[in-house]
Length: 318
Ligand SMILES: Nc1ncnc2c1ncn2[C@@H]1O[C@H](COP(=O)(O)OP(=O)(O)OP(=O)(O)O)[C@@H](O)[C@H]1O
Image (cartoon, rainbow, N blue to C red; front, side):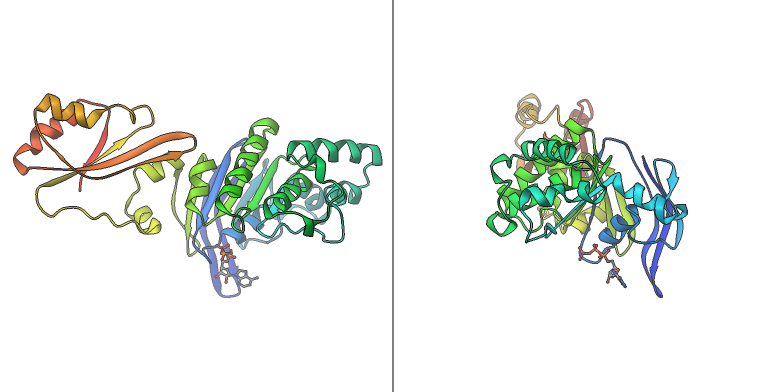
């Protein structure tokens, strides 16, 4: 659905996107992740034609964005909804009027607008707020209005630029659940930009890591967090503190394996004690995944690694 190849973007002399290549599939929830200034928003703005790219190709539905005329770009944007960190609602308009606005601008009939706005108010759970004004709403409610407004023209793609960054953790979860529902129910492709790893874990199927305009990783979210490579660890700021004595083995539990009492069974079967250095379980994309570091005596290394190899466990010696 979205195909980006060798995309480069300069602001004057400064290169802010360097040789970006990604394919985003229809119906996917895809995250663009990075620290401040990485180029996330610039990439998102290239996606909806708000920003021009310098070289390379960016196709949406097999159409090269930079080859679209002004008129074509206008109808292209109809297919792309966008939500922002600070909601961008019009303060002097009611919830109903805010949601109705894009359809009014495109000249839809009043009855069609009314039908659509009511359907969307129900989808985002704000049926009782249609007469309220933005300053009478909480942050989460404002974002729900913005989401409804972004969906009025029935876009195929929803772009989200830090849409939960101004919200508290519980409200963030409820907005992410709403985005998941929209993705499943309306089959809308969602591309979201965020600097929050929790957001990526909760919602994204795949993620792209950006740093200073460079891609430093792109993979399934579970893979990225379950078995981070050195760059990902650096990106996450994770430092692994392990004992200097003995051998430290890190075990990665895939989603189907996590509840199995692997460690205790191994201890029993090998008749051996282990030190558990640390371990963590995480929910990624509704799956529970985890990893654990054990510390063993040097003399037991072969026995333990042989045992692990016989099971469906990913592991490494640290
Ligand atoms: N209009 C502009 N003119 C010149 N430089 C710009 C412009 N917009 C962004 N930049 C620069 O491009 C780089 C990437 O900015 P961008 O806003 O895409 O990053 P980001 O990852 O979205 O960061 P943040 O999360 O802080 O918004 C930054 O160095 C920024 O200063």
